[in-house]
Amino acid sequence: MERTLIIIKPDAVERGLIGPIITRFEQRGLKIIGMKMLQVSEELARKHYAVHEGKPFFEPLIEYITASPVVVMALEGPQAVQAARKTIGATKPVEAEAGSIRGDFGMMVGRNLVHGSDSPENGEAEIALWFDPSELLSYERVIDRWILE
Ligand code: DAT
Ligand code: MG
Image 1 (cartoon, rainbow, N blue to C red):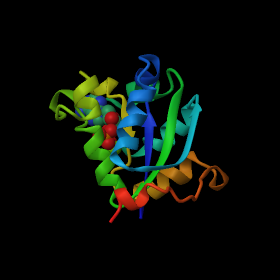
Image 2 (cartoon, protein in one colour; image 1 turned 90 degrees about the vertical axis):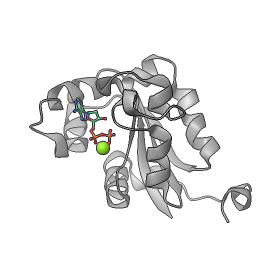
Image 3 (cartoon, rainbow, N blue to C red; image 1 turned 30 degrees about the vertical axis):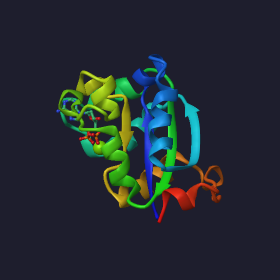
């Protein structure tokens, strides 16, 4: 089983899209094993996006992700990273497939609604950055045998 970190970003929260976005992941069959709403500190934002430090869009990115509350989720499933990124769509919403979250709700790269980890290793590292172990749950869903073979 793989785990991935999802962030429902400030634009999605402000636009009232928390529910529809969570629904996409739920309907896909990904299991929510942690979820909370928080105001992101500048320190956490800089840590989360450290790989982009120095790029021209870095400071606007930090401003964006700290501008209003976010909802973060830890999701679990087979190939959860790839499944979630397909559900999210390409980084630039105009290039994202229709049917993906960014392809259905977004227009601009700096307002692209959702974050999803880009590898299983980063999924684990990002979940460790955003969640305390006590905030993560292990449970069986009775529907799992109808989602997972
Ligand atoms: P993703 O969020 O699809 O994983 P990423 O990790 O390459 O994309 O970049 C993180 C965020 O940084 C992305 O969601 C939006 C912003 N970003 C990336 N490339 C950008 C660019 N060329 N111009 C402006 N913002 C960019
Ligand atoms: Mg990324």
